[in-house]
Image 1 (cartoon, rainbow, N blue to C red):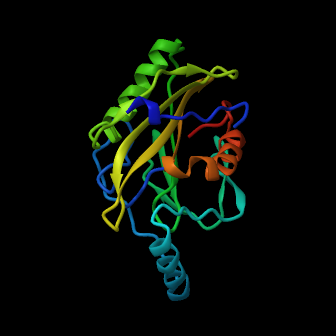
Image 2: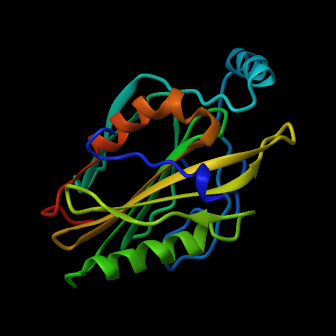
Length: 217
């Protein structure tokens, strides 16, 4: 399945609630179900009509900047995406999903005074994927790549099932990095088939991510 994997890059350059209701926790937490996003009746009717015609549609609204109350990070996310916050006092685990629940972005961030090398950071990322995604059908990860800013990108994918029953390849791109005592994993998820259509807006989201190493959780 490796031929299907495509990467986003920080230079050029989504948790699916419907598919991953049993995951979305920090590295050491127990699984917890995700909440259902809330939409109005008119929005729901429009959504059903759209998804019936295009089962892999992901709804991107206007991007707005989210800044965590602690000031530890900021990220541009679509205004119409739903935030699910499963953070703990010592670890952030925040997921934004679109109203179709086929696209999303995840921030997992915690503090650690240890200075990790690239191999150790990749092990942290591997543990995150193992805890949350590697049990999905036909999960496969590509070769990690060091980015210009020192983060490590790992592209991965698995075969997901839409509400219509249609099978499709779900593409994940996860970036692990250390900034001071902050260890962060940024993950985006989109249907692989729609990569070319959604890559520009996803790149903007990725490039907007900022960590403040001086802030405290």
